[in-house]
Image: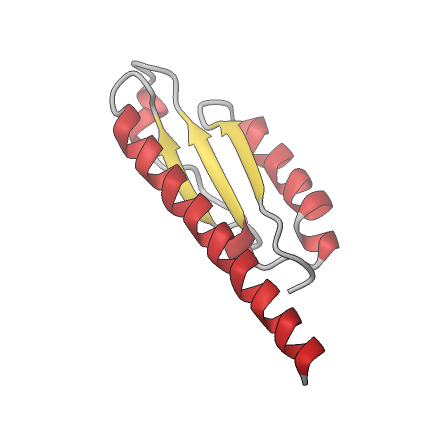
Length: 108
């Protein structure tokens, strides 16, 4: 792992072109930096009442390994909040583990 940063990509799942743009963002900020999939979170936001709000966008192979949250803040904000907290917790754990490995390498 290059470092313990995280990348959060939010896109409008109701607009098909946003999914293609998300692939570009992923390539620019995740793949090119040598980050692990666990360091990235996709949030596919659905507008309230949208017909696509219940469907899941088809992810490209490079994005299919990433964690994704389907958000609709009008219908279920607590689910979004909990999922985001889990993601932040995983980033904090990775940072802590990375720091411990670095400290051990200095000691040995």
